[in-house]
Length: 313
Image (cartoon, rainbow, N blue to C red; front, side, top):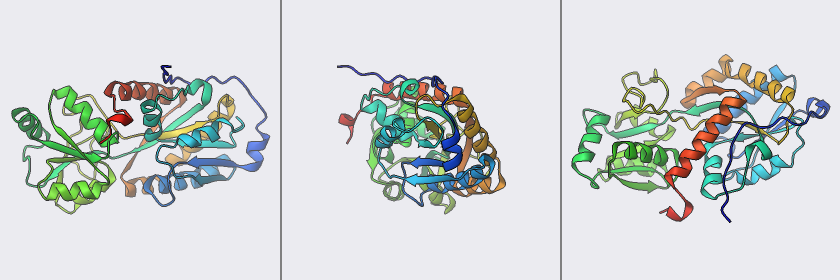
C-alpha cells in the first residue's frame, strides 16, 4: 500500500493541565550521543532556557542513526510539555525515504526551529582558482569525469550537491565516504575533485589545505568573508540542515508558546552565541507555523530527489 508523508502545522486540539510539566521539568529527547556538536549546543540552550522557563530542562541522549524510534516515544508522551524532542533533518529524511505514515498534525506538534550548521563545498587549495564557477565550467566540459564526495548517501552534502547538479544539468560522479576525514584525504590525494559537507571541512580550510568554493548559509560567514553563498551565485538556495523542537500530538498552544519564548531567549544569550560561534553553527529561528512550512517543503524536495535506501551504495 502506497504511503505518503504529510507535514503541516500541528492542530492544537487539547489543553490539559500544565501542572505536571511545571512541577517535574522538561525532558528533551536528543537522537545524538553526548559530546557531539549538536549535543553541546543543546546543552547550552537547555541550561539557558531552564532559567527563562523557571524549570529544569534535562537532556536524554538516545543515539540513533535516524531518530525514528524516538518519535514513537514522543507520540506516547503526555501533551503537557514535559517531553519534547530535538528533530534533525536526518529524521525527516528517514521518514521520507522509508515512506513512513507519519503526519505531523496527527503525530506531533512543531514548536520552533532553532539553528543549523555551516555547510558548503571545498576543493584542494590550488584547484578551481576561479571558485565555484570554474568547477561548473569544467564539469560541463567533461561530463561524467569530475567527482564530488559526501558522507554517505542522503547526507546534507549529497542532497544539496545533487540539487545543484540538477539545476546546472551536470553529470558529476558522486563518491560516498564513511566520514568527512576520508573524503578530505581523497581530496588531498587528488582522487576527488570537491567535497561537500559541514563542520569537519572547516579544519581543512583553516589549515590552508583546501578552500571553500561556496557556502550554503543565507549570508556570508564572517569567518570566511570572501566565500560567496549559493544565493549570491544565483541559485536562490540555502542549506543549514536546520533542527528544531517538536512535542507530542495535541500540545496546547499556551505550553508550546511558553517553550518557544524560553528557547528564543536562550538563543539570544551571550553564552549560547559563543557556543554557536565555536561550533560553526548559525541561528535559524522560526516559529511553529514557519517551521512546519519548512518541513513540508523539505519533505517534498527529498521525495523528488528519490534518494531511497535501495539506491544506497
